[in-house]
Image (cartoon, rainbow, N blue to C red):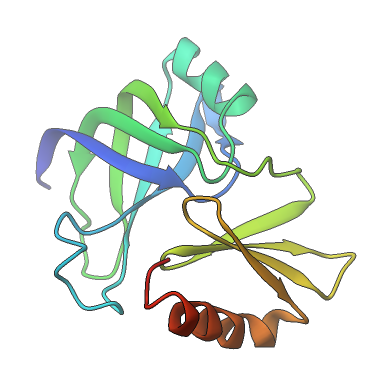
Length: 160
C-alpha cells in the first residue's frame, strides 16, 4: 500500500456525510491537470475523503455544499485494485470557491463536463448552467439535457 502526503483541488460531489467515531466522508471530483489538452471524454478522478479532525468535520457537515471547490491536504492511499477510488485522509481544508447555486438537501446537482444540472424529484424539467454559473436553459426532462448542451455549444462556439 502506497501512501503519499498531497494537496488536491476538486469539487465536492455530494453533501458530506457523517462517518463513524466523529468523522465525515465525502467524494472529491478532480479534473485532469491538463484538462485543456485532454480529450473531452477523459473521465474525472473520484477521490474518497475522510476526516476525523473536529474543525474539519464540523465544516464539512455544516458549511460545505455540492459544487464547492476545495483544496484538501492529507495522506493519500492509492487504490488496491484498478478502478477503485483513491482514499485521502484529510488534515487540511481550504474553500477555494463556493458553488454558485445553493443546493437544497432534497435536490441533486450533477456535473456534465463543463455543465451543471440540478435534478429535483418534484419536477421533470432540469435547469442547466455552465460550471461558471451562466444560465444555459431548462431541459424538458433528463433525456433532453444533452440536446440542450449541444445547442449551447454550437451557438457559443464550444465555450461553456
